[in-house]
Image 1 (cartoon, helix red, strand yellow):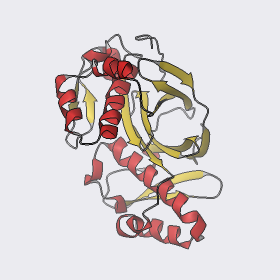
Image 2: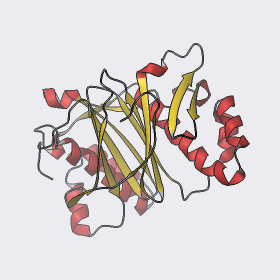
Image 3: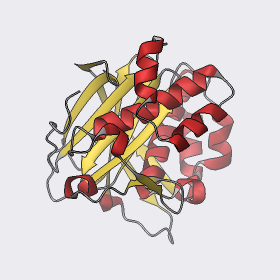
Length: 264
């Protein structure tokens, strides 16, 4: 990757996908050199090698990708956690301060969303996993749980992952984590691939503020995106597959759901 050579307009969302196979030791060492002492300490706390590897990829991805948008070296990015743990950029450079990013990982994939000037949340899940349908009964809204259970049994697992990733993307865009109960808002998914959101009374938010998309970067993963709305209806996606410090390729993807109000 070349530093600070990526242009990002307000109507654009850039999605960076790092699939996580084992890497050779030389690349691991290069990526490790980007991490702060605190990040290295956190990495060492993971018991399993696969979790250490995923953490390394995650931090290297964030640092190398953000350097595409501002003249800051990958090792020089600084972050502070918000009240609910979401990290925010603290570098004073104007281009850095305009960036918004969010990160998610699951078995085999780390994905990073980058925007400018508006909040974004992203979530990914491996759909090869068994769907814990009982979670919907306990934590989803009543409308969501009932609609899920009304589907044919063969369709319930996929719908669960659709709902779960959308709900996670929303609470991450808000920066509130699980302090925002999953039962207090509902996603409505219909047969024409559109998605809407509704909120319980008392939840300080409006459906007009957010737009949702869902895509498949490969056969085994689902990605949901929640984006703060703007005055333009145009939303343009760019998807890339990357190994930090090694390779980068355009990634074909299937857009499976989009907001009713927009055509982006």
